[in-house]
Image 1: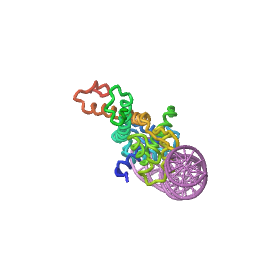
Image 2: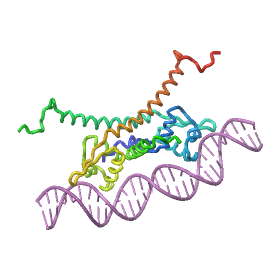
Image 3: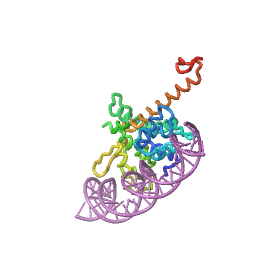
Image 4: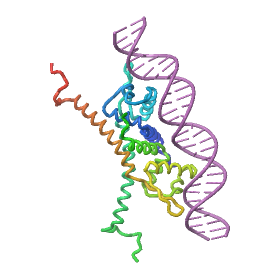
Length: 122
Length: 122
DNA sequence: AGAATACTTAAGTACGTGCTTAACAATTCA
DNA sequence: TGAATTGTTAAGCACGTACTTAAGTATTCT
């Protein structure tokens, strides 16, 4: 009960999971500048190539990165739509939370008290 | 090398890590409606109370949730600033990636080729 | 005081994650 | 063709995560 949005939920799982690692985020930051090969992505890190490849698999599995192999080099690029997907989820939550806080605030300020139906006018 | 933004980096780690679990996201969604006690948060789930408490600790550790114990009940509320923090990081990446793609697109379309400085005008 | 409520702590277990090295495969270059 | 480049696969290891049950503590109600 409560878990009806199962597909989008699994997607959010894998996207946020992918984002929860500094190496993977650094790879994403790099890919914002444009596509790159695997070894090009690996170069800045003190990590074995297979390690980087595993991170790339996580990123690709989440949909944050798309890759295509041409000849012997695999070209990796960022997928803005997936970034927007996660961003959108956060935006929706933040908006909902802030909207509630705004209502509360304007109720407490009350220069123009909006029909005090719940307070006793003793 | 490359890891200079260590504090914000650790924060992003824990925030995205916290978001990477469906139970924790469901708790966040609930908290958008307003503060709630621990057992109130636990009610919809088929999970032991300690399980939920552990999720709440992860959420609080990331800064996504703030809690305060009054008497014997702990009141939990969402922290919109932290949601905005994660949202902002994603927004910055998406913007950078999209800006690049837009430049590329308008270069390929080229009804009005923008000072072809890199192409040979043979 | 005694019982109910609302957590909290501790300990254990199964499974997931982030790395590593070693060995292999596929392309391209000389 | 043989050598260098670029990536892939497999196996293993240390540590982290998501739960559980059992037993506690602190508050509040009667």
